[in-house]
Image 1 (cartoon, rainbow, N blue to C red):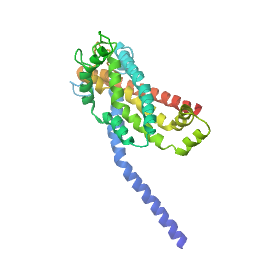
Image 2 (image 1 turned 60 degrees about the vertical axis):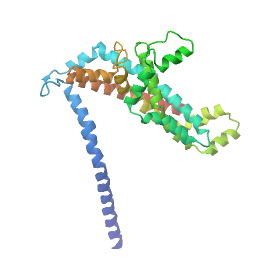
Image 3 (image 1 turned 90 degrees about the vertical axis):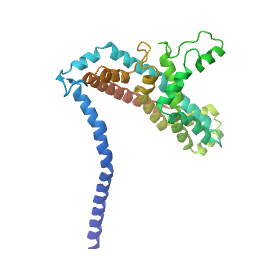
Image 4 (image 1 turned 120 degrees about the vertical axis):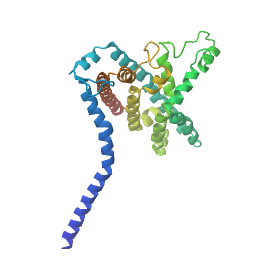
Length: 304
């Protein structure tokens, strides 16, 4: 009798636990549906209509015409190319520099809090502050960057944000300075999880500093590297704020990324249906690139 009672109590407890877990997940699930799945579904549907912000209703059904127009548009491919170029300029440097700074900081026995604060503090600043700061640094004639270049003896300094050849590079440098703290903190936390016994054992076996980094530390940072790589890739592919405020896609659309192209098409030109199509295509491209990048990183980890 006691066994049956115990079994019934356990079943009720398990059922109560399941309902409690479901209740705790319900708010997140509601927000997930409302603010992610809902807009994504609306974007997919709106792409089949000639929707406009200046007219009521979904507009005229155009089928796949918006997709054909986007795939045949030089502006779409140009903006995608600028997005990929920005991603190349920022992703790898932000990973390598963050790892280097974390390795250097981890060697200090005291004062790590200062370096964590110093490197992470810029990341807490809003994008508007970063944009204004670097617009002043890159300003022609009076900017700090102009003065530094002239101090090295270069008299004909470029227009950092006004020259199509330098504008995207200048924005990438500003982005690296702004966001490196996030990756730095992840790597530093992962380094501090490595037992000191591992370092001591490697040193006893005769491994030098570079050998310990290459053969011991880097392989043990595999999960942190995968996390940083995927997050950084997605963040770079979704660049918008700093470019919108620093150059607005100029000069001559040399820095216009895909998100800015979507914004200008949807809100400036009022073509919400076409903008939805481009947004969905960008989503699929980012998803594909992220999956391939994740697979490459995981394969590299296994080889190491």
